[in-house]
Length: 183
Image 1 (cartoon, rainbow, N blue to C red):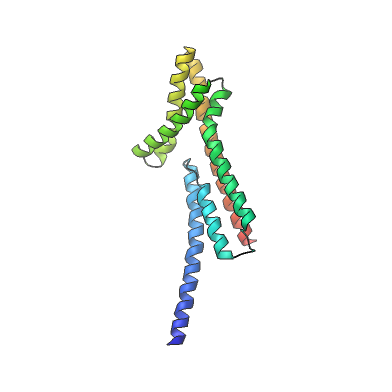
Image 2 (image 1 turned 135 degrees about the horizontal axis):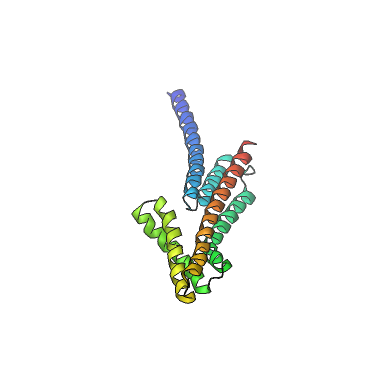
């Protein structure tokens, strides 16, 4: 009976390790999918890296330096995301108020769009919300529709640029984690 118990315990241990590595892989995949829809997936990859650190043990990749670097990338992507729309507006000659409206429109549009059409609605809502609020603010300030639309497109282009940044950063973190674990 003790042989059977030991075999069963070993099998359960192996199954647990397999499931933990599977969870790490699914976190990475989920992070990539979220990034495509302009939702920060880098944090899921950080979660996978933390899980991998527990699985590999001390002194193995990913250690504290790698985990801190992953966290720094996650934070940097989020900071860039928060200020990108405002930067896009200011770069096209918009006012400081329009920059704040771009941030507010992005956040409000993402929330409302996500309620209407989950996931994809957040992306569309973010872009439409930032465009609409910036356009209204700049239309009122400039009294010209063409110039207001030009400035508002800056918020949209910045939002699209952030989408590409999120996908690239998430993919880079996944590749870094995979390469560090496999090599």
